[in-house]
Length: 73
Image 1 (cartoon, one colour):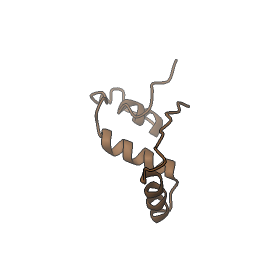
Image 2: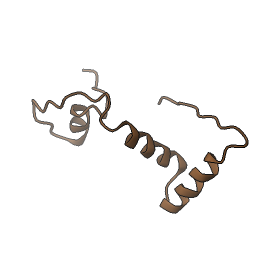
Image 3: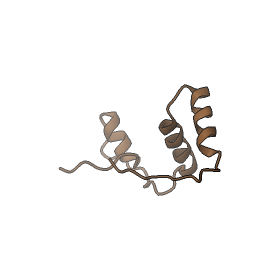
């Protein structure tokens, strides 16, 4: 799993604000950050959807939309 470290200055309030918002939503800070990144990226970099052949499960559907990498065959 890729890890992308994010560092904040000691004087930055972002970590505390992230923790407070995550508590409000009853999710982890990591989940909040992942949601924020996904919302910011939107459809950027995703391929045009080709559903040929028709996906038969969620994994194939997510791969067709570029949300998951294609599995090696």
